[in-house]
Amino acid sequence: MSPTSTPESASRNQDLPFELIEVVEVSRTEIEVVADMERVVCDRDGAVATLDRTPSDDRPMPTLPRDQRIVITIDGPAGTGKSSVARSLAKALGLDFLDTGAMYRAAAAIAIDHGIPASDAEAVVRETTKADLHFDWMKDPPTILAFGKPIDHRIRSADVGEIVSPIATIKPLREHMVRKQRIIAQQHPRLVTEGRDQGSVVFPDAAVKFYLDASPDVRARRRAEQLIASGHSADLGSITAEILDRDKRDSSRADGPLICPKDAICVDTSDLAFDQVVRTLHRHVLAAVGR
Ligand code: DC
Image 1 (cartoon, rainbow, N blue to C red):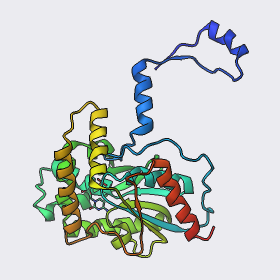
Image 2: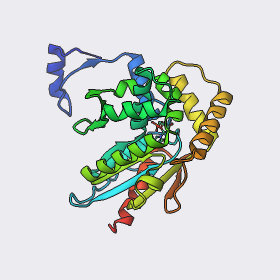
Image 3: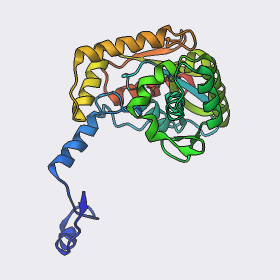
Image 4: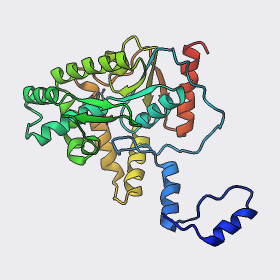
């Protein structure tokens, strides 16, 4: 968009019922992209979630008191809008947001960039430990650093996506991540954390646990819509097969498998708009803390 503030716009400004700060030329494509962004809610991994962004309600969502220490976990498979929902919920409640998938993605990126095969568990853990993964909490959302350098872009690339699932099955790596996540929660005691094992393994005593789900068909459709919106072709059959395969791998691994913790509130996002999901979770949190 190019700013085009002109003398005419300045004089026209006086007749307007609002203060005109700047006139910008917007192309049709830009309008379409912005309109699309209202609907296409990408998870931070670039995957998924064409949850409808139309607000269902414009009532304000109250934040939690500043002295309220609380850990809220959100688990679930890819394609449920988990990441975006967790981030919005954290913002609405005035809490910090932790994306634990980014930590496993970082380990996968480190392995690739150091020429370590996913099968060499020992080397993956050694190099990831050396990398001293941490987040820059001054950024919104927090960005992840390895070896002191931001690697947010790197961890969203396709090669990382391809090997992160086997990397995430490495038991000592998971133990390392769980320790780190618990330290993060000590340093950020007002936290919404999302992943696969947050309510079941990492924070079994979390004040509120959510499990987001959506039918494989809906998740596959969202993924296909997202691919098409970004100019790629999409085959619904193979996307569905991929999703089912990934679900099976994530749910059947020995350590930290994807499960719905028995004390979690399960929300099926298949037929819900983004705003409805965030508001539903927000209501549950307020009820849980007695507000
Ligand atoms: O949420 P995501 O797609 O960024 O997660 C990347 C990978 O890491 C995915 O294969 C699941 C795995 N993961 C995990 O095993 N445990 C977590 N707490 C978070 C993610």
